[in-house]
Picture 1 (cartoon, rainbow, N blue to C red):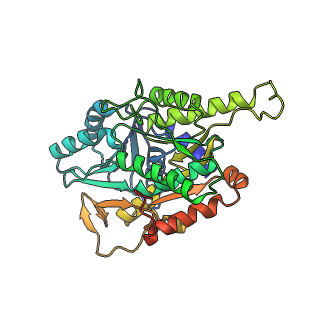
Picture 2: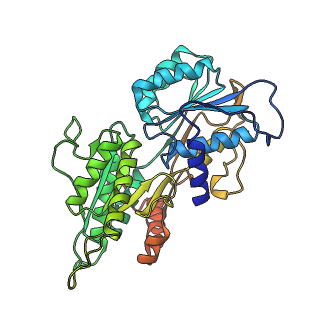
Picture 3: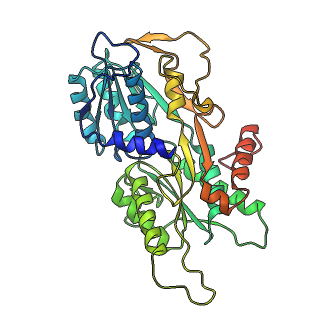
Length: 386
């Protein structure tokens, strides 16, 4: 996964608008130009999440001859998505992918005005899309429950937190499931041990317009401010769901960890010093940050292979698409087996894994995650109630 992360970073550095030439490794040349185009979420394509995964897969498809080239553009929010879609349309893209919920409304409007074009929304967070928009979404409620339990297990201060960016799909349900996971941890652990607390900051600059203190703007600045506020309140494990906001959280956590581990002052007496910040990450496995103890990964690779039978297949069994129940339909030159992919823990569309450092510190962490996943699948646990 670390090698994949390095590859993703290299791909993301292509630039604001990049047109890739036909791959020399393609099995056969395409007779016509057939571009795969992408519009990012606010964090861009180096987000270590859905943006990076989708770009990597699109480049893989280009190399296999599915596309003759790729075009990618980073946007900062929904207001820039329409302009990006218009530019992509002028390139005559065969498939235009918009990542994240921030541009979902703009995608729906643009697609409705261009019914002959084909689009894909990755995590759009809505079913209200025109017929020419395919979609890939993920059920993050059960993983949020496991993340809450895992965060409580990893915490050294007893305070853990979760934050969502404005417009993130399933926001309220994710927050409730996280709290339920923390509650189950408290119920199932030794009564003599301190209880874990799910942190709720007081309303203030980071609060949403509706008053929720755990919903913030999807910007790096908002993520940084949320991390600082939480860590100052002794929260040592955070679970951010978002794009730029999540990157703001993990970047700030990295900086704080570096400051704490390179401090020259030695703790006095039995004082072990402040706890290091820890993150349960939503995105690719966390080799890119030493703060990450576990990752909730949207299996974009499996989703694309399930939707498009001609997508280059993987030798990784976790990424192999199941056999379609019906024959694929032809849409705008693509064979499509599933118009609307819904990734879950049950179908392998979402995975949650503990990182090596966490596994070495908490010996049964991996087994605990597996156990919770199976209890949720069996119906023993309702992730929204615990």
